[in-house]
Image 1: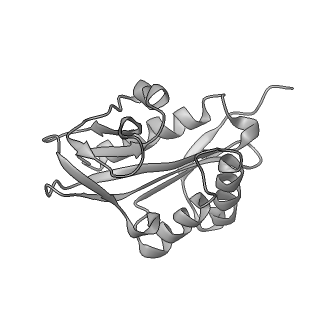
Image 2: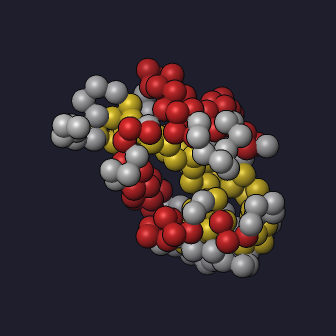
Length: 169
């Protein structure tokens, strides 16, 4: 395979919605932990006004990745915490740093927006490289607890139960 063109990351624009849906569906199609709802979750976040950050990764021709950030609530009342994900990379572009670039860009953007932190559900080995870690004081009921991780950006670290935006229900 030849050398790929450079990837650019930018905020979502109105014309990106169908491409975001397609790349998200393709990225999660063969994932054993997915029920295929990820594209619908992003659509619902957008419709509900809960898509606080939506970044697309593009090569010279097409959208090859996407990342979403939405608000979460924490039972201790902690403010300005957000959920990172879904993170999607087209299958042909996986393993080439596109997902990592999206994650680093999203973290930088949320830090610049004075977010206190981010939570996510994902592989601890992968997300640990970005500073995410499991915190037994911060709980998301359901999946195995070590997959739920947080990244504190500023302020006090919360403890309690996390609830995602209604689109995730």
